[in-house]
Length: 126
Image (tube, rainbow, N blue to C red; front, top):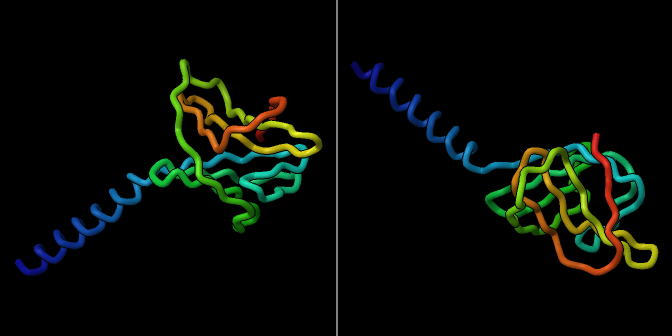
């Protein structure tokens, strides 16, 4: 009898831990920056990175080879329709390019990092 109770407690603990992890939604996308770009004031060299966004905290991380290269806070804004594919948004001021937002493919929400001025450009993803 004691063995059954112990097993039930273990199952409940595992379920509780799993549900906490499931609630924290971290979206991940591999992106290729074709030129150097600034993210929250941090210069990110051109190349391929993992872009991670935590819905719960609003934390954006740019990661390369398991190392966080840049971080920024972001907010979620609704879109009128779902995005067909992953989209990056940036502004250009002089010779500097600043990441201002992105949208995950299939999402009806835009992730906005900051507002800025300048001409909009598009990036690509892999």
